[in-house]
Each structure stands twice: as C-alpha cells, then as structure tokens.
Image 1: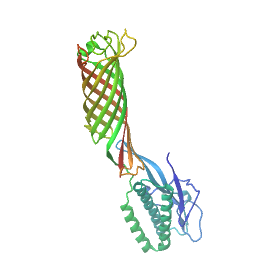
Image 2: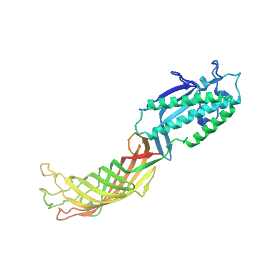
Image 3: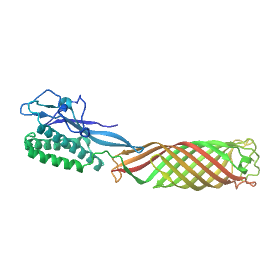
Image 4: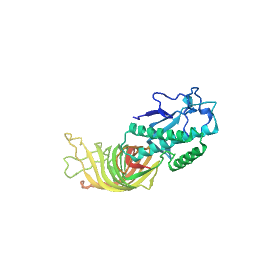
Length: 374
C-alpha cells in the first residue's frame, strides 16, 4: 500500500489543511508567469504569495519493457491559491518567485536522493526536515533580495540555484543492476512423446512438471520433476523385482527427476532462452491388472538435453528497503515453454526397451532476484 504524505507551505509559514484545487504546476512545466497567480487575496507588507506542496509518493515508470516502482518526492505550486499584487508586479518580482520555485525543486531533488541513500527511513520525518530547511532558504532569499527589489542579490541567488539544479539529477530512476544470484520456480503442463523402442511398449502421455532454477549471472542450475500418464501397448514380461508383468492396456505413469546445467544465450527484458544438459532418473510406474493394487515398475538413469524459453509477461523492479548493497527486488512473471529429450534404457527389465522421450511442457514461471537502483 502506497503511503502519501502531503505538506503545504508558503513563504514564511506552513499552511496546513489546504488542498490545491487548480491545475498544479511542476518545475518541469517551465518558468512561471503571472497567469500562475490567480488568487485575489493580499497581505499587507507582501507583494506576492506562492503556495507550494511537497511530499512522498510511489511512482512507476516503464523503460525498455521494465516497470520501475520506487518512492519519489513530488513538489508543485497551486496557481489557485497563489497571488501577486497587481500594483507591484514587475520582472524582478516574477524573478523572485521563480527563484523561490527553484529552491522548492532543489529540496525536492535532495529529498529524492535521501530516499535512495537510506534503506530504512521515516518518510514523515524526512519531509518535515526538508520543509524546515526549505522555509529557511526561502526566508533568506526574501530578506536578502527584498522580495526581488535588490536585483544584484537576486542575480547571485539565481546563479547559485541554477548551479545546484545542474548538480542534482532531475530524471527518475529508470535503470538498475541485477545481483548475480536469482532463483525461479515454474509449473508447466504438456505432453511426453515416446520414440523408438519405447513407443513399441508405451503410448504417448500428458502430464505436469515442476521446475526450480538457481541462476548466477547467465548460468543456471535446473532441477526438474515431471510425470505423464500413459498406457502399455505391449506386454513387458520378466521385470526384475516385480511381482507381475506389465500387460497391454495397463495404466502407467512415466516420471522424470533430473538436475541440469543451463546457460542463457538470450537474457534481456523480454526473453530468456536457456539450453541445458543434465542427468537424472526416468521411471515407469504402473498398477498391474491382476494384482491387489500395488504399484511396481522399472527405473533407469537418463541423459537430458533441452531448451527453456521464457517470454516475460511482467518485468518489474521494485525499490524496497532491504538494508544491503542491493536496495530493490527484480520480479519476472513469464510464459514458459520447455522442450527436452531424454534417452532411457529400463535396465530392470530383461528385454530392456530403450529410446528417446520428447517432452514439451507449457506453463508459467516466476523469477526473483535482488537489484540495485541507481
């Protein structure tokens, strides 16, 4: 939940409980004009009144397919509640108000920098402190320039404000650096196609898969478990350590459990393509027709080779006070397609069928890692 903190201030004092009703004006919208002073009130001894607001809010920016979600400081003036005495309007008075607006923008950028330098912060206290410093600067500007009447002093202030603005970044933070380590989890469903001798004994099947990936830069350690339902095409007699033979039409499940190494040949904001090779176990588990329901079956060591394709549906970097070198979290939600082949030989059978199993699984995965927003 985003927490919004609103503060209202004018020259010399804090105006509480007032919400701008006109079109707000930010620094990026350009210099002030007399059209930005529409309120009709006047205060004796003052030539103008510029009301401004400052606070902290959540911001989301999308750059190159990545959504950046981070806290940001905002500041704007309210023309609806700002005024300038028509008898004293001059170029110098407008310059004075523009300089004051520049101070507001300086402190807004400084507040934003504080948000990224401090992993744990009290937003209310940070804004309070910023507003006090801003009020002091505006009071000094007013006193030293006599509300713009002293143009020499005003020029010095303008030069200093311009220099500070150039030294502080105005743009949002649309970039990050990922930590080396990341992890992923996915769930997929699809088909398993029996090839070669295996298809003489077993039908093709459909099933599910669960996968966990651990990544270091572009290197991935992939652990997988999948199973597909099938049936026997042909009797498979003389299974070692089995109480019954596998007969035609016996239902069975083909299970895969493996670990593999993968390297992401493509890894960007939208796609990740990771070929992988590995080794694991393939098992055929079934319930014989003429047994009391006990499941038996052969297993074998198997080689695995395939490719994992990820199309990122959402790609988000979220600033988070992690209190470490990395101050953000990088989350990816992806559509996955895994195509892999296994070479199987069921060594527990005297007539050992062998061949390839092709597996195509489609599903969704979630990847998370830490990141540094700069």
